[in-house]
Length: 147
Image 1 (tube, rainbow, N blue to C red):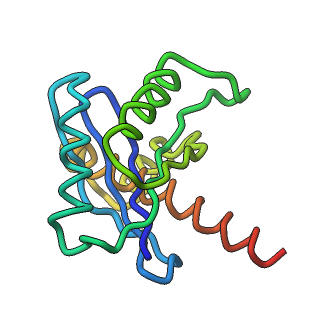
Image 2: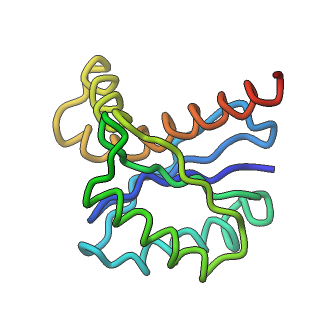
């Protein structure tokens, strides 16, 4: 089964998915929506779960949790937690919150090193951040299983 990962923002959401062996994370898209219109994100999640080529293959949603460096919560952290609560009422899959500190900054750095301009970075950074969050999650899962 696969894991679907989200990097949620006020107006964009990066999507990534794992392979069926849960060893590789693949960036899917940067999804743009009207500010705080999270029902659009929920509908996009339902598309991936029910209509896309991944239909019936996802067993868990991973949601990036933007903690501060000192692990305290920000306004954005609270927004993501509220979204997770609403999402749980709309889908039956388990939702896991994954620490995403520095994921967007790391994604921007990778894209800069790759020679992407500002417009290209804007179109790719959130899906790459979701991919990095998912890679971290998968790595932790494999580490826990091997111990």
